[in-house]
Image 1: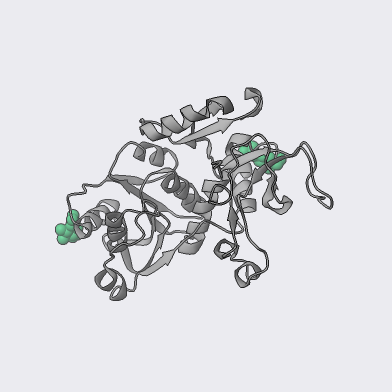
Image 2: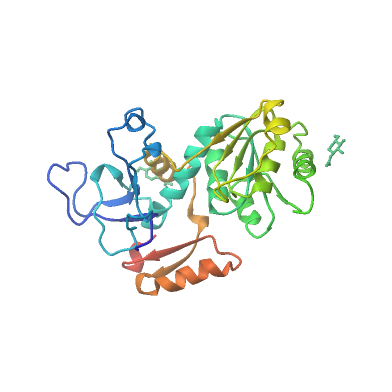
Length: 298
Ligand SMILES: *[C@@H]1O[C@H](CO)[C@@H](O)[C@H](O)[C@H]1NC(C)=O
Ligand SMILES: *[C@@H]1O[C@H](CO)[C@@H](O)[C@H](O)[C@H]1NC(C)=O
């Protein structure tokens, strides 16, 4: 099947009745198209639509093609000062906007981001833009923590997987100057040990939002970590109603996604892009495939 769901492009043709786009417009594609009819769609939570047709999620082909047909209402016009390369990042950035909304990040929040993969990193940007005044990021691997700092994290921690989640959590909280825990944790790794650490590092009465997907079944300290401390556990799945916000944040300059754009390949060299990601080489964050004139990519 065709892969790809983080995409931007130029409109070549529009269907009858499409008035907000015309050939030549540069757009970011929101890759999941819901039914628009069910209760979830009608109440605005269309990411929960059971009939969602999401690019590169079987049986639906993805966007890594020269031409792609997509409903006009899921194509978002890019302002002149948001590049195609940034336009494709509206998808992962949307995941972070939705997670920060779900978590209730607001002015003055202290936020712990668990994991410094691409989703952890875009959560740093979203949390900062939402008004978080202290952001700590941890990972078992130090490689991307420097980038987390560049993007605005105030503190980073390389955790020792041999230590217990409770001890790791207390250590992170002490180091960060929040010995009672963070207002909010956003779990972006999907690893059970990280979810456990995140719960214990959230202050009593705080919220932990879980974004990362790992094993389908995980064991969590629900009693000691959540019930008796009233730590609210929330799931966050994809996003809804985020693209206009994501584009405006990028266009206004409030958020700079460019440090995430580390590598790109020509369409015909697509396989090299996958090999680079698979190699886990240092310094690799986002690897994009660009089918066009190099001068118009950025
Ligand atoms: C965290 O700080 C508290 C007191 O401020 C101390 O009792 C505790 O041992 C510290 N824990 C860790 C893991 O650093
Ligand atoms: C991008 O363009 C918009 C609209 O012209 C402008 O308000 C904004 O300041 C520009 N952004 C940057 C980062 O220059």
